[in-house]
Amino acid sequence: MTQISRFIGEVVPVAQRVTGDGGESAAPEGGGGFADYALVSLHCLRIYLDTSYRM
Image 1: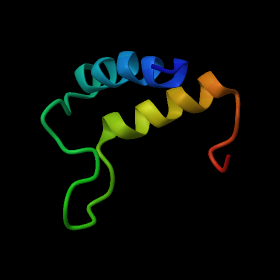
Image 2: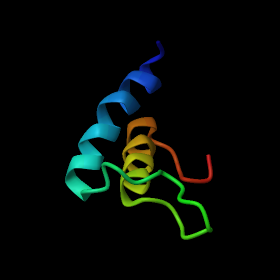
Image 3: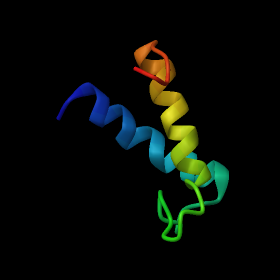
Image 4: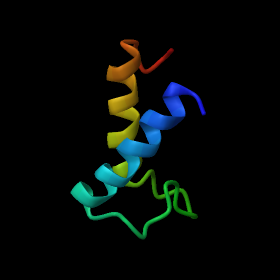
């Protein structure tokens, strides 16, 4: 398992608890946008990798 996958494995459950989106799909059907926990997890990964969203 890579460092990134271990990091995400730790971050996603925390983000789900904090945002209250535990049962929601990361990208719901119908184009309604992403779940809050998915956005929080992505932001944490961006900080962890010290890069921009574009990268």
